[in-house]
Length: 187
Ligand code: B4P
Image 1: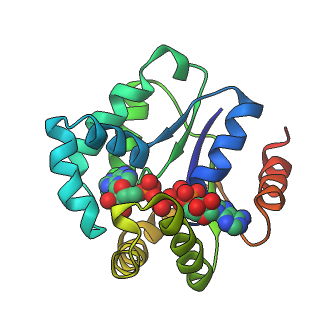
Image 2: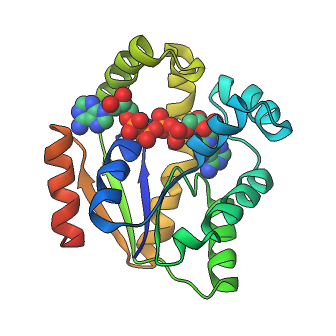
């Protein structure tokens, strides 16, 4: 099964994807996590990405697609994957279409997790206290929300035209949200 998780920063995409992995036995591919690993390893890609991510902006599409292609062509992704944080804009959505066509693959679901902006800000503030991520400061979170509204929200419309979008209410406990996802995917 091939799934794309869409939603604002802090909507719980990563949190839900980790729970889905246990049930579906396919990998969770988070472009944010791939970038954070590259930053921790101080690779040239990581150094370039860090500057952009610290401001809350998006890393260039070519770099992101190259990294994604490398990940989804690994053996453990042959039966499917959960994409979290990709595509982040319409260019990436088109690039993913091309890549999947080349690999003779199709997407089964795009799950759009809906959470109020105030709730997102509160969740990320809590994570900032625990993890201290450089892009979780209030100003940067506001920029990330603007970037989401302008660049990522249209991706939902892109997949609505393909009739594969299901909106998931992201309010409530982590378990509540997971139950809603499981009801859609029927596992
Ligand atoms: P991401 O790593 O994707 O960061 P995110 O949007 O904050 O994560 P997510 O929505 O998964 O939230 P989470 O589950 O952690 O991106 C970071 C940056 O990387 C971007 O700004 C960009 O610069 C770069 N990047 C990534 N992908 C890119 C791409 N494709 N192109 C270009 N640049 C890219 O949840 C957040 C918090 O809420 C957690 O602390 C969690 O515990 C809590 N939470 C979750 N569900 C909850 C619930 N139901 N109730 C209460 N709290 C909850």
